[in-house]
Image 1: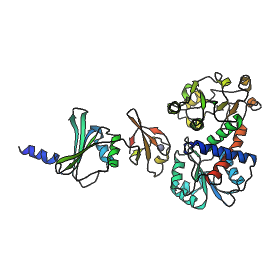
Image 2: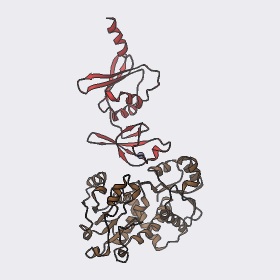
Image 3: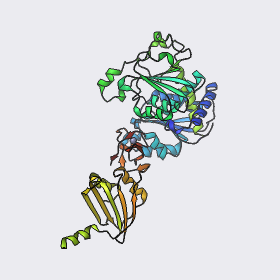
Image 4: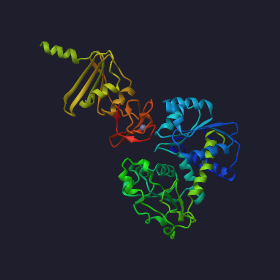
Length: 302
Length: 151
Ligand SMILES: [Zn+2]
């Protein structure tokens, strides 16, 4: 399909997004495909992220390719002061694709400019994490049977939460209505609301979790991430602002599903896990199929 | 009489470029942006000249040097109302206004401390956003929008 890098969700057109989601469906039906046999893919993680790395490495293995790489830069030549450019130049000469995570924002875009092979961004600081966005969309499509005409209620840290920003951008290709549930300190930034206005997409804002719980199709919960705050007092004020438990779900729409990029802290009570609305564990599993689809599409195999 | 002819010698330009209506405080930045530091050409700079339109203005005259539009348009970031006069044989042969560039490379810094461009030897690239006359930059790398910070 497309020999290119995936750095930001905005790099994919609506058609490309839909194509990747269709390919992911194929992989969900049959998760072991040796279509990339003989290929070598680098997973280079300059900061640890076990969850994301395991998902990507499993995807590579299930496609029949081999993985090389590192899971933490502290024992590599990077810690001796090698520039990112030199590391990428060297690695891209060895492999067919680079999957990278790096704490600095824009690092993946830069890597894609110096690399001779496609680069997949597995997270560049607080900036982008496009495979997360695609697996969120896949989860929405699989649970609702469509991407058009849905109401998505985003809850929690909408100020720093990059997953909500990227999902908002990606879902703007479709006929979506948004509800933003956040305390004053963590409201959706103006630039994203302006983006929706320009596209003619409706949104509502509230600071009450109860207010729009019963009129959404997707409840997208997020964790308040301590590391995004510069002021510890501000974090203490908002860290436990929303807690969803099973008793609050009595009157929700029958097909409503709860998504969460995981890990959760205490914004979703354990008793929600056994309700038919919980989808976050299946959502994480979907990440495998979507990452298999991303890798095979970017290498031109689907 | 002697002093008048001296003044003429300094300000009259036989061939070259005159940049007028630069905000007085941005004259040195303009020299930076046009990469004029260290060149051999004769350069005359006026700062805090009275201007009917802008209060205090600056002016830069560069002898025997003509610029590409792309080079000059970078000045629009700090001097959107500047005018450019091309001088040949003591005559103004062309007068032009600047147009705001869509993209700039190298001359500004990203204000995001976590941006790759502030940690590695990466040339900065920005797209220029003009919202009702308020100019800001969006970093090509970290995708953050900020005001203009020159290197
Ligand atoms: Zn930047």
